[in-house]
Amino acid sequence: MTSHETSTSALGLDALGIDAKCTVYHNMTYEQIAEHEERFKEGVFTANGTFAVDTGKFTGRSPNDKFIVRQEPSAAHVDWGKVNQPTTAAVFDALYAKATAHFSAAEKMYVFDGYCGANENSRLKVRIITELAWQHHFVTNMFMRPEYKEVAPGSGFAADFTIVNACNIVDDDWKAHGLKSEVFVIFNIEKRLAVIGGTFYGGEMKKGIFSMMNYYLPLKGIMPMHASANKGPKGDTAVFFGLSGTGKTTLSADPKRALIGDDEHGWDDAGIFNFEGGCYAKTINLSAANEPEIYAAIKRDAMLENVWLDAQKVPDYYNIEKTENGRVSYPLYHISNHDPEARGGHPSVVIFLTCDAYGVLPPVSKLTPGQAQYHFLSGYTAKVAGTERGITEPQATFSACFGAAFMTQHPIVYADLLKKKIETHGTRVYLVNTGWTGGAYGVGSRMSLKYTRKCIDAILDGSIENASFEVDPIFAVAVPTTVEGVPAEMLNPVLAWADKAQYTVMAKKLAAEFRANFAQYVLPNHTDYSSFGPNA
Image (cartoon, rainbow, N blue to C red; front, side):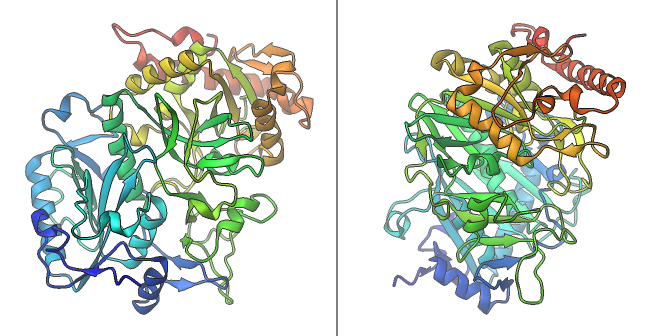
C-alpha cells in the first residue's frame, strides 16, 4: 500500500510559506484516515463503524466572519455587501502569515489534492491543508477524489485554488483588522488562496470552494447552482434548487432515479455536472423509513458531525441536544443508485424548493418563464434552526438564487444565465413548498414528506401537466387541482387552514414582503420582473 507520507518540500508547500520538518499526510486512503482518527482520539466510531466527531461550539457556518480581499481585477465582479464583505490585502497577508507560521511549526499536517467539478473543462483543481485527520476525511468525502498517481509528488499537479485551514489559531487583533470576531474565513481571489482560523466546522471548506466556483464559472458563461440533480431511467435530468433544510438532498435521493449530486452543480453547453464527490446531509429526524437511501449511506467511511450517540454508540437522530444541524458526509458511491459519471444532459425540469414558514404557498405550482426569474431572484424560504450561528427557530428570509450566502457575483448575473438556459432548452419550472401547511410555523404542521414526494413524482413523470390548474389569487402561480396521492384540500393552501381570514392576512403579509424584497432587482438596463410576482 502506498504510504501517502511525504514532506512540505515534495508537495511544494514551501512556495506557500509552509516549511515544516514534520510528516505531511497526503490524500490518505479511508483506512489510513480511520487509523489516524482513532490514534489521535479525534472522535469515536459508532456501533456500525461510522466515525463521529463534534465540531465544538461551531455547529454551522459563520457567515459574518467571511471576507474577500477587495482588489482589482476581481473587485469589479464581486457583489460587495453583507455576504461578500471586503477586507484588505494587508489583513489577509497578516492572517495568512500567522497561519503558515502555525503550520511550519506543526508536528503533522494533512493535504488533500483533488477536483471540484466532474467536467474536466471547467473544474477547479483544489488543495486543502488541514490540521486534523477528520477534516481530511471531510474533504476526501466531499470533493472529487483522483487516483493517487494524478496528484502524487512529481505528478505535476498544480492547484487552481488552495485553502489553508488553521482552525486552532484565532485573530487576536480582529478589531484592529476590521473583522467581526476572532474567527476568520478570508479569500484572496488574485492569489487563489483562502485562510480559515478559529472555527472547526467542516462546511466552511466545502462552501468556500463553492463560493469560488460561483466567481469563476460565470466568467466562462457557465451557470453554477446551489442545487441537487438526478437522472431518470430514460436519461431525463431534473435540478432541485433550495437552501439548507428545504429538501435538496432528501428529494434528489430517489430510488427510481440515479443521483447526480445533492448540493452543488454547474450547467454548461453539454448539460449538468456535479461539483462534488460526496453528499452532506442533515440528520435531524432521520430514519430508515423516511429517508432510506441516506440512512443506508451512513456506514464505514461516512462521517457524522454533532450527532447524539447513546451508551452503545448508536446515533439518535431525534435527539437535538447538540444541534438541529447534525450532519453526515459520505462519498457519492454510498448511494447505491448514484450516477458514476456525476453528469447529465440539459434538464427537462427545474424545481425551486422553498420552506414557507407562513404556510400560505401551495405544495406545488407551475411557473411561467417570467415567474421563474422572479422566484429565482427572490429565493424565498425560511432559515432552519442550526444551519447558521444564532438561528434557533425558522425565520422567513429571502436568499437570492436560493443560495445568496455563496453567490460571489450579483444575483442578476446568475438569473441571466438561468434565463438563457431554460429558454434554450425548453425547461419546465415548478415551485414546491416543503414548509408548513394548515397554518404558519407554530400553528400549522410541516408538509408531509410523503405528499411532497408525490408532487415531485408528478412533475418528473409529466402527469402533472394533465391536471387542471387554477391561478392563486394572491401569488398568481398556477396550482394543480389534482395530483395523484395528494389530498385535494392540501393543494389549495387556503382549504387547509381552519381560519380562512387569518390565511388571507398571512398571505397578503408574505406577498408584501416579496414585493418589498424584489425592489432591489428593479435596475436600469435590466429586465423588470416585478410584474411576475404576487398581486398587489
